[in-house]
Length: 164
Ligand SMILES: [Zn+2]
Ligand SMILES: [Zn+2]
Ligand SMILES: [Zn+2]
Image (tube, rainbow, N blue to C red; front, top):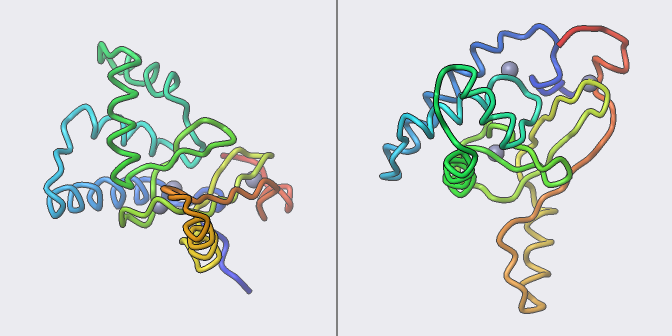
């Protein structure tokens, strides 16, 4: 039986997801010579609060609630940095962000969006996306990012289990 992505597993050890993501991000930035400033780290941490995509304003509100006096443009700039460097991905159809669980500066991605619980899981980029980008290139179109978003229902929602 195929494995259920962690994002859809109710009651999983999410602290573990957060710890792993933040330490992988720190490693990635150190290796790539990028500056993970305290603000960028806080924004990344806010995005990782759950597997539900967060919009820029929600992130801003979360930081303000924690006592940080940040304005939306500052958060936008931090998100832009995180997205450009593959630490977060923007879910286009929701205009919201999720943390990347396979750190590696990939701009192509496949996303499973559960419209019942709102969680989003990421699948690694595959040859389908590469072929799409390749065909775009053959038409002299430089595809900077190729994404596929599947909207539907996760196994936990289909089974009727409740909870985050
Ligand atoms: Zn998690
Ligand atoms: Zn990713
Ligand atoms: Zn669901």
